Length: 89
Figure 1 (cartoon, one colour):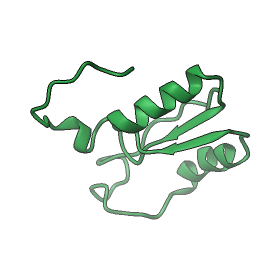
Figure 2 (cartoon, one colour; figure 1 turned 60 degrees about the vertical axis):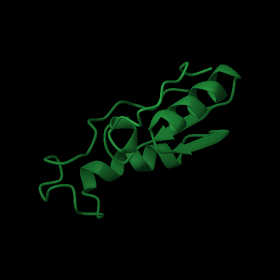
Figure 3 (cartoon, helix red, strand yellow; figure 1 turned 90 degrees about the vertical axis):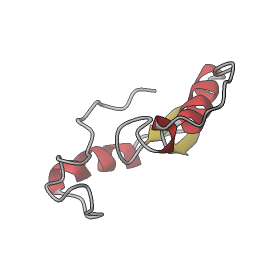
């Protein structure tokens, strides 16, 4: 399943340092399209865990939607946890 690509909202794009939880009308349009899109699974959060779950579900044939507040991997996943892992499986 493919959701139309729109520029991601983030600090600098909202005009208030990313602190606003309200959405401008230009940001609501993709959300309205997303709400009308049939999906089997909605994953909230595009960090390493959310991205891994979305990838696994899509590879199993589920119509998967991944939503992220900012840029993918920009939250906790952007910082080193000082753990070494074998990657996504």
